[in-house]
Image (cartoon, rainbow over all chains, first blue to last red):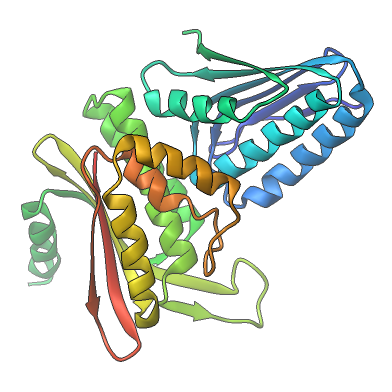
Length: 128
Length: 185
């Protein structure tokens, strides 16, 4: 499968989906002008990948410094897709990295983590 | 005389502790530009990371609320996006003691006032734990009626604020009221 690599912009995070290594990553800030336009291709790529995963394993890293309220909805949808794949038998590890100086992002990570029923969730400080 | 006119406006703002003021048609590009300036100013002020991120987060939600919901708008359905419409709002960022204050205002339809007031009162009166629980619930639920966004913006503002949010409405004419929302960080 073709990897997905979208470089970060001032208002959108970098997307680094290395499907061959089963390591997917979203890193930076997220407050796009148009959330749907930015995240739709990301959802599509993730859906296509998860369909091929079967009982395989994958890791998804969220390394977000800041996200606005409409991006939070998009992140929830990514989490739901990952959790659904895990429910079907995939071994999914979700990492949420937060800046220790901003507990709001830590709390948000906890919120997302609580809703994961099948994927494994790890809440970690961003390395400095 | 010419200098005096604008200087007086500047003095009125300064006396209220205002360091940024924008009154006009609001676009995503304005959000990007003013947002960068705010980050720079707070970095120069040596504000801590949490304060900087919180001021910025409140600013983004306030700006996007005006861009999406201000009832004062100029539409032109003959054109393609982003020229279909543009909306008017006012936003200031100032200091009040140690706090940064983000204050935004725009017209709303008077028929929306009670709905907004009820929703904001509920959010204002929640403690941090209640806000967290309610945010989680809202994230799962669909957007509210009359809402184009995730409907989470007010909650994000309240979570980032270090004091209860303040809001007010004043009637402008038969159809419109001016709505303001103030958050301190």
